[in-house]
Length: 242
Ligand code: URA
Image (tube, rainbow, N blue to C red; front, side, top):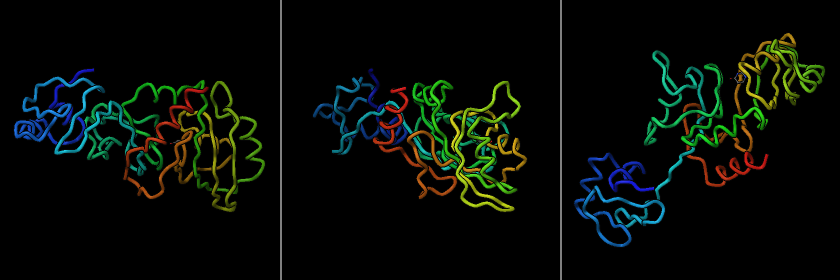
């Protein structure tokens, strides 16, 4: 792949096209050890080695971010009225090409992967792959072991087929109960409808895990961070092996 030098640097977040052009003309950039002062110079990725102010700049085609989605924003890239999850990614360059992997309801919090890697997203969402999703759920009503049995057998939530077996772990049971629920699909309002099917109401929902990716609890709702290389590799190998 070939890219103009100014676009290469701007894509990697080193400034606007205008700012990086200025830096290039001032001699701040070397390509393969030679100072290059023409922003139009074509860079071969990944063969060419680019340095900016003495530090290497590696071009990353794909970006992967973990957002702790807050309540009140929609899992869309664009919306006429509502704030979207992309509006929260303030400092991400090339943001227009990013999208959330799957959806969380407007009132659901927690782990949302945002990327521009369509292939990985497709593999994570493919109904054939059954990637586990773990939710913390607060429920109005007393959650029982029988609910767990029902979820483990597959639950009729009014669709053509029952849900795939799901795992319930009761953390606290009472007028208000707290549980962890692991599901392997991503049907519309699935967790809420599963509890509805056993006569209970979800009053708080937070996704903690998607496949090998676990929500970084140091992220406050609305905060995000880049995935580590290990996290990206784990997601890639998890979805490739199946
Ligand atoms: N299940 C739901 O009901 N809502 C979500 O946002 C995610 C899973």
